[in-house]
Image (tube, rainbow, N blue to C red; front, side, top):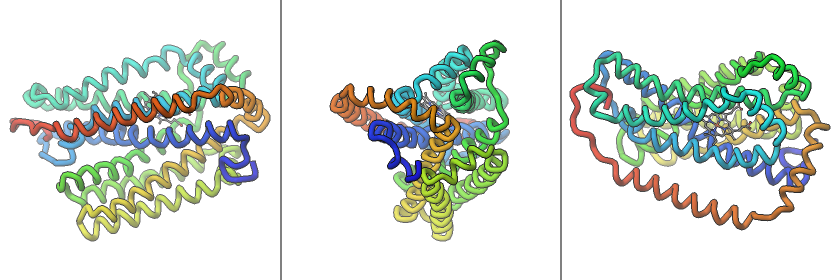
Length: 362
Ligand code: HEM
């Protein structure tokens, strides 16, 4: 592994890992929007005297579709992670069992609660009911994110560790890395939300650029602090992974992305305008950060598994690569991408202005 990702890897492994990283990056954008967006909605609904706000109206309107986007965009990396790390991934699923499967009802409940947030019924309820209902989607989404992290960390442990874990009968896995890692995901969601929300405002010609730039600034500060905490809590293998030839150019790109985002938001703030060129700078920075960190995350997994265990997976990748089906995959990918694009178009063009309500965030 003495070359940057994915050049030191055999072609089938490089292909699947690249496809995995690209599709996981798309999933991260959606799930960040949903994670930070549902949290903002919960705060807005919990206010005793809610103030109408354009951003909250956009979040309320778009959130069910964005949650569907997060779920749908999760399917492609789910496919690739099973080809790449079959045994570890399935073992963690089986060990966590009901705890793992609980993400399905949690996502269903969270999804329908998002429609309640849009209803006039809720605006007529007392403040505590509105706050309680608005807490449901964020709790469900956060639980799902926590479960993915838990599953991921368990999937890279050794077979003997899995045996011992099974013997305990527990369906909850924890380790010192869990909380620092979750904090990076949670705070990292805020700058992504700021970028996507800013584009939504730009498209509608509305919004307060300084507020969104402030939100992004707070998010960038918090995620940098959380990343520092993660680095302090990290073990030697994780640090070695970040320094490895495979990962360090991507780590440098991720840090450059943070600086680009900070500069872009400063530019937005000083002009107090959602200008496309300024938002493009923020978006490029965001893409560098998410893409770079997704590769580093993979480098950490590969180092944690160790060279022997990782290289033992190569024949399975070559076997899957030899099966063909790429043309079919690309055909379905194109059809589905077109259909999903059409759904987004429908949501954009069929947005109905809500009738004036007596209470509740708009
Ligand atoms: C909207 C709720 C969701 C949230 C908040 C969420 C959050 C996350 C997080 C935080 C991770 C990274 C875990 C880590 O590295 O510590 C992750 C990974 C992943 N998620 Fe999601 N996720 C959601 C829904 C889904 C769904 C429904 C799917 C599948 C259809 C999915 C597929 C994946 C895959 C395949 C990975 C990579 C797993 C691995 O490499 O071990 N996610 N998700």
